[in-house]
Image 1: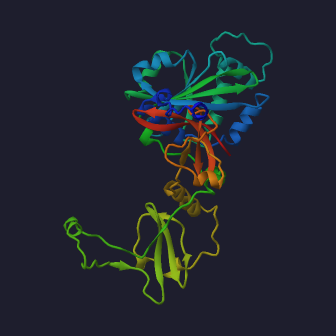
Image 2 (image 1 turned 180 degrees about the vertical axis):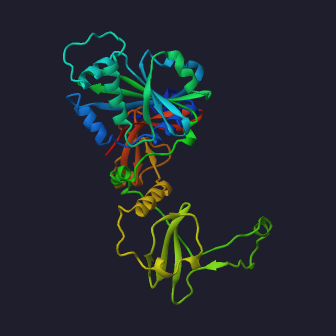
Image 3 (image 1 turned 135 degrees about the vertical axis):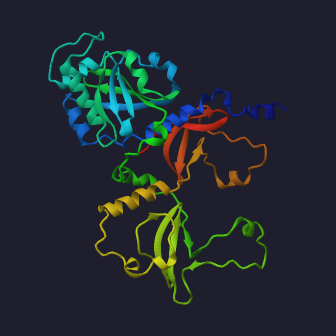
Length: 382
């Protein structure tokens, strides 16, 4: 009895009560803002950062949303830079007031100690700081549109009841500090995405282990709701447009999401004859020159880039959340029974892994989003 009791292990459920709580608006704010940022700074930012005499690291810490009435308390006394967006919209950058003067002085090439206390920027320092922010916005739909001297002037920039915010940490040769990007809630649906295909393809290794199922579509038709609801065994559905006719094969569509590739079925294989494109097309449209592969096809051509961009937006990737991985022998596996306790070797309340095709691509922490479980990303593996 004593030996058996000594071998017992204390089993406790996952501590969901320790999971951080987030509002759904906060999660949607993160999606909206992160989707509108470039994946990596461009050449303009590298040149601007070099003018500071050392590496500049900008790390994203949190994306959230808050009611517009809280805007004055969220500005933190920072230096405010207005960003103009398409269609008359705008955003706001707030920079740590203690760090902003030092950044401006260094960008101007002015050496010497700077008082740690915040102070107003000179006209020259404002110009230098605007140059740095403009370089960071390079490649996006935003452009620097001047400084805001009084916090009272920002209210008219945010007509929506909610404000989206992105919190970042700046590490520079002249010190560390914070920066915030603030935007009206309407940015969620109206601002075009600036992410370039090249920046996404530079990280194509993350997609290497993903598995994607494509549909070989040979026909398409439309049925009325009544006909569809009354469909029964032995009914015949007629297709206005149909592809291959045995034994010669013919045109088919290799479908993915809302688009697909035009292809030619012949023998035991498919020959792709067009770039990926959105929408549906009739089988008889796949005739003539479209059925001949373009020998001069260049992935850098605008048509090819637009096709790749559309394909990436339709590409589904299954992401798995893992609490950890357990290694055991085959014998131990065969001996598993209900009630068995398996040590996981890591704290249950610790970080979780996100895997694609069995490969861990990111790490995060579990959060509760109004009753639904999500993962807040803390680290992304290259």
